[in-house]
Image (cartoon, rainbow, N blue to C red; front, side, top):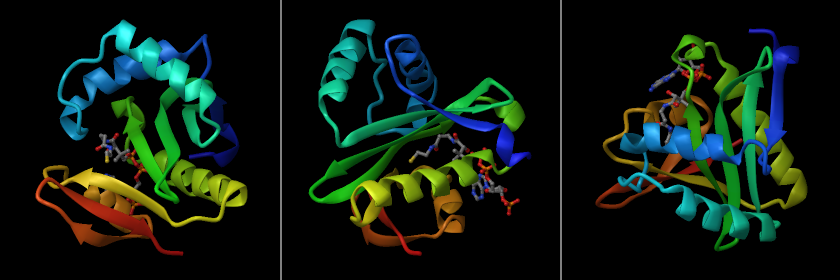
Length: 150
Ligand SMILES: CC(C)(COP(=O)(O)OP(=O)(O)OC[C@H]1O[C@@H](n2cnc3c(N)ncnc32)[C@H](O)[C@@H]1OP(=O)(O)O)[C@@H](O)C(=O)NCCC(=O)NCCS
């Protein structure tokens, strides 16, 4: 993995449809189990654009889309969401871990708040977060609340 080949692209009118496709393909890992329609996605995107505390990064490697990582403020905490590598060819190369840490650096410069995420307790990718400096801070019937510690 060559770090210089990783790029972050902001979500905008030209690429936002990709996020809907990726989320629908990966819904087994997320809270919402239904397919998102284009109408719903446009509504979400319109609200997203108005919210300065909601950031979404599309990750590229060698100019190819790899996936996404979002960060938004909820209850005075950063909530990391929509974390997905959509390209099985590039899984396990460390691109997502590197991106996660870079994005955490960026958001902490914007607002120094605790960084958290919610992971369904059926999702084995919890272990990926635990490898990446998150710890379990609380357990709920359906999900773990995890917290970045570094
Ligand atoms: C979680 C996810 C983003 C990780 O993507 P990835 O491209 O494999 O991540 P990386 O290449 O950066 O991972 C690097 C390291 O994590 C490890 N890793 C990857 N998935 C793992 C998992 N499920 N459990 C434990 N370790 C994992 C790799 O072995 C590698 O370890 P190493 O550095 O010791 O060799 C990806 O599996 C994915 O998109 N999953 C589906 C969506 C999802 O579950 N998102 C989280 C929702 S809360």
